[in-house]
Length: 196
Ligand SMILES: Nc1ncnc2c1ncn2[C@@H]1O[C@H](COP(=O)(O)OP(=O)(O)OP(=O)(O)O)[C@@H](O)[C@H]1O
Ligand SMILES: [Mg+2]
Image (cartoon, rainbow, N blue to C red):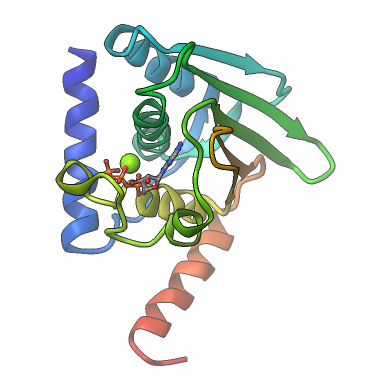
């Protein structure tokens, strides 16, 4: 039932990403920890060989988020981590959330102890349709993640060395950024139409 729900969200977003632009995000104040816990619960059932840890140190939990899209971010990152953990003894994923009050940002780290990312793959990581998984991957997973985080006025960075796992660090604003998002989307629209 929960797994059905996850695959329908996956399908919806993949179709949009493959055939058009991602739908504009539709944010509302939402509990980030609830989204994370829901996704983890699904993977604790479907990938029970992987130890998934979640540590929440943030004093802010309600963020201005599109629930389905942020769920999709965690699904894509955890899917990737699980694939990178296939041959690893004691596979582990850690999700660590903290916040910076001065910068008004929440930091979310998704860390695995998998195969890691080589420097060649690293430079192409967020490229649409780039995949090392052959027919098993669309190569859209991280493109979608980056688009969603950008639409939420956030940032994503990656660090990794071969054989030493990967760490995806995302930062999301704790303030309501509606006007900021609208401005950036309008700029993109105008750029696409060749106006600026
Ligand atoms: N946690 C990770 N550890 C090691 N390599 C990774 C990790 N996450 C992504 N990658 C690499 O980045 C590539 C691109 O990832 P992306 O999620 O965009 O596409 P994909 O996983 O190949 O396809 P799909 O998401 O459709 O299953 C992957 O093929 C893989 O080589
Ligand atoms: Mg993927």
